[in-house]
Every structure is written in structure tokens, then in C-alpha cells.
Image 1 (spheres, rainbow, N blue to C red):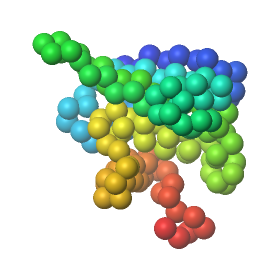
Image 2: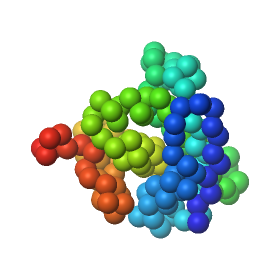
Image 3: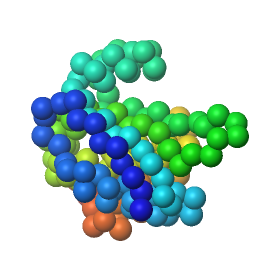
Image 4: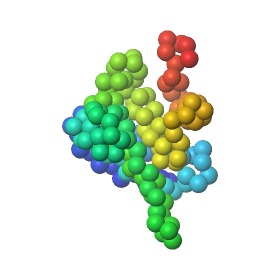
Length: 154
């Protein structure tokens, strides 16, 4: 089983640890080397994620999630994947704007972040397509529809 260190630095509504555990486990289950991993999930408000976004990505304003993969020093064997910092108020706002169930959007963003910790990105179109396909596959196994579809169209 994977271990999640949950840090809550927001008063905004958010899922429980068990839900995050289910989503992270689902994402890691498709990778053989994802067994028994550890990760930190920190839930924050817009102010904190805006500061982190500026500091680490040189972008102003809040973002829904930031991922910080852990790279163990040479000779150190650790199962720590890294940290996910999620802006709880922004997730709620996006879910409402996109007419999605909040729980489904939380699941998608969490899985998206775990894939980033595993080295996936969406900078190049080909990489984005691969990452989105994995997200869709994992979400499907959880009974959640394709998050990239709008009004039944992809």
C-alpha cells in the first residue's frame, strides 16, 4: 500500500485522506515500480500556491496543482515520490465552471499530479497525449468519465 502524508493548510472543503489514497493507488497501480510509494499531499489556499507558483515556475497567480518530484541523493534508496500541492478553492471553482462533480475533478487533478511525480509531463503535444490517455484510463477504472470531453465531444 502507498503512504500519503496529508497536510491541510486551508479551510476550503476538500476530500478525505481515504479518497486521496484511492486515487493515488489507482494511478500507481498501472506501474510496477509504483508499489509501496510515499507522497505528500498539501492542500492550500490561493495565496500559498500563488507564492509557490511564482517561486518555482515564475508564473503569477494561483494554479490548481504543483508537483515536486523527489530525487534521492546518490546511494540513498527511498520510496518517496514527492509532493503535490493542491489549491482547494481553485479546484472547487474549476469544477463548478466546468460543470463537473467536485469529487471527479479532485480525482483527475490528483492523478494528474501523481503522473507528474512519475515523470510524465504535457509540454510537448505527444507527451500531453500520452499523459491524458493515462489519466483517462485510470479515471475510467474509477468509474469517472473522460475529463477532457466537453458536451460529449473530445
